[in-house]
Amino acid sequence: MSKNLYLLDAYALIYRSYYAFIKNPRYNSKGQNTSAIYGFVNTLLDLIAKENPTHIAVVFDPPYPTFRHEMYKEYKANREATPEDIKLSIPYIKKLIDGFRIPVIEVASYEADDVIGTLAKQAEKEGFTTYMMTPDKDYGQLVSDNIYMLKPARGGNDMEVVDKQKICAKYKIKDPVQVIDILGLMGDSSDNIPGAPGIGEKTAMKLIEQYDSIENLYNHIDEIKGKQKEKLEENKEQVLLSKELATIKLDVPVQIDPISLTLDDPDEEKLTKLFEELEFKTIARRIFQKEIVSTPASSVMQGSLFGDTEIEKKESEFIDISTVEHDYQLVDTLEKRKDLIEQLANQKEFCFDTETTGLNPLTAEIVGLAFSFRSHHAFYIPFPADLDAAKELFEEFRVVLENQKIRKIGQNIKYDISILKQYSIDVKGDIFDTMIAHYLMQPSLRHNLNYLCEQYLGYKTISIEELIGKKGAKQDSMRNVPAERITDYACEDADLTFQLKEIFEPELEKNYLDNLALSLEMPLIPVLAEMEQSGIKVDTNALNEFAKELNKELIKIEEKILKQSGVQFNISSPKQLGEVLFDHMKLDPNAKKTKTKQYSTSEDTLQKL
Image (cartoon, rainbow, N blue to C red; front, side):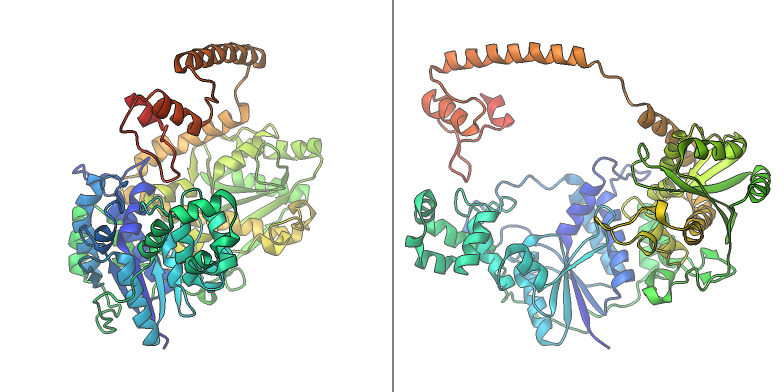
């Protein structure tokens, strides 16, 4: 069995988790902000479930100072203090990691990237494939044939594995170790590493592409022309120091111990107590609950994270349309439509899903409509391209779509409601959106249908690319796909959404989120759809007149500024403004310059004046 080691940059992931919830922080009943803890644990669970590591460790930065602070007192001096909520979260995160029986590694005077770099290189010699989980670009210098960066999931995208080829292609270099030279030249504002003034990432990349290293660049400094040469020569010591600061140490006094890093089963008792204290009910069920759903086609387990669970399945183990018994019908005659409408009218709820020509509901055209009101059963109705003919067909379904007594279910149903508005159909009745429901329960995870089906149904959906091809200029329109081929795809979407509703609705209630979902979030959906459809009226004449008035005011203000300063300059130029304020007018004798050797004219600086 191949050995893989996952090394997690703790603080990078904790900060990322904390700020992911910054607009909507998570608080428990005790008023404790659990955003960082919740996000970190979910990241850890996703990693274990999807990547199946054999060995793992979480690496923390030690309390400052580190050896880099001794080299350069200004190192990270520009960073704001750690938010108090993060400080209070760290002990809980360490206890949770211990509950998962995962080792925590921390070495005095050395940052997490130095420890991870040292362990990764040691592990490579021991035959491990190592993944460094972090969003930090500095780690690119460590990537090799057996060492990879693993960027956390973000914005609905999966975790990204970054290999040598990606690093070299991104920075136009021959070897990932040259990332150090690029960082040395361009500096790193997040760590307050100065680099060379006036040299950004693009220029640094060009120079290293041509000269391979900073040392070789200085060996050929006479080939550089103009101010660039002048800046490089004036700041040589600073650039060499910056390279040293950007270099990840590979000789930290820490030794890899494969036995202690082996992933083990979690301590259920310890984790259960912590989850109870933190009020992480959903996470506790995700790990320890035995069965969430059972269907005639398969019994899907979502229990022990480290057992034979649904979320650990490889792609080949998912069930799909070819292995699940189903009844998906193409409804393409008047008689079939009448029969379907009669069935829909007798339901308390049904799921519907639109197939369209695009993603913008204000411009997309209807291609077809799918319904489901029973698991593994669904119907697809193709619609004509002609607007009037499509509206005429919709008239047949108005009686059920606008029925107040029938609840409508959908995945991102606001889109479908908006599409139907284009055809004069006003969807009525209570709403249940599986995407919104999942967001309320698991805000840090992804919410698209493919992901939800894999996680909760163990089901691999039909890819849209199978019908219209990959994204790009050559991608076809759904309009050109035969109705017979769309039927399975559309029916599957409606059917699976209905199945997800059956799972999510009781889960909302168990997590005391049903009132929030059904009284606020779901009723807001048609309101938002109406707002997007209606837009706002804009009086362009009034805005133009107002713009003229503002322009006159700006001219007066500019004249006043130039008069007070006593010199002519471009007030839109931060560089010229700084020189006038601090060199000519001498408003602040202690004014500081940025790394580009010009005065700061930020809002904070100007407010102090």
